[in-house]
Amino acid sequence: MVTKTVDYSDAELTYEGYLALPGDAAPIGLVVVGHAWGGQSDHERNVCDRLSQMGYAAFAYDIYGKGNRASDPAACEALMNPLVGDRAKLQSRLALSIATAQKETGIGADKTVGIGYCFGGLCALDEARAGLDVSGVVSFHGLFFPADNLSADKAISAKVLILHGYDDPMATPDQMKGVLDEMTAKGADTQLIAYTGTGHAFTNKAANDKEGGMFYRADVDARSWTAMTNFLEEVIAEA
Image (cartoon, rainbow, N blue to C red; front, side, top):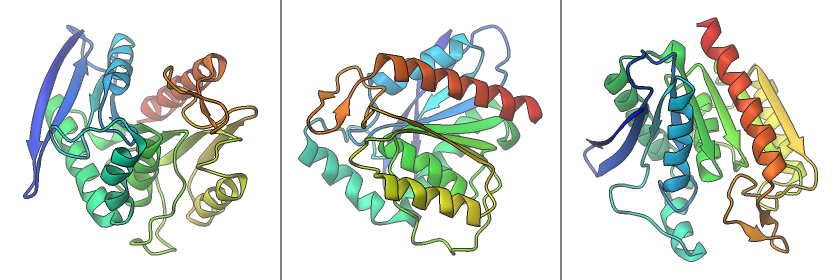
């Protein structure tokens, strides 16, 4: 495995990505990894390392800008909410991140999949909604807010996998139905796996707020990882 930091910029900010490559062998595909509301962290970098050991190139992007990170909820919301409220800006930063990863690896859209956790799960869905250069997306305990900057009849060509805690207070059963209705209306090839007894942040080992609905589930973490790897094999093998 080979890893490196990749700086990239737009007219507003400089961003700090993390790229993990499988080493001597050519990557079998590219996975672009979206971070939770606090910004890129060890969690996303560890995901990249695991994926590179499976033969993928993996790029953890930075949607907030270099050095912009948070840990307490209020500070996390202060970073996330402006982008949730300005989806065109969010999608522009996602497009730049994907283009940077593809330039670094030489891998095209046909073998690129976007995944993401929590806020990054919303980002993954927006990659599909906006028709960015990915063939598939995976949302882990993501947020389901629709993208109000896109037309309701804009078709989705990327395949979609949603891995969801049924008891997630940040993405309720009604919102789950709403995102499935949206994907159906837009013609997306979509799978949703809802895990009962499971809340938000079920892949985050540091999450332990059962009363607040945010807690780690080792078994669901493992099941969702397997579902994702099967999806990657399907999407990238078809390219």
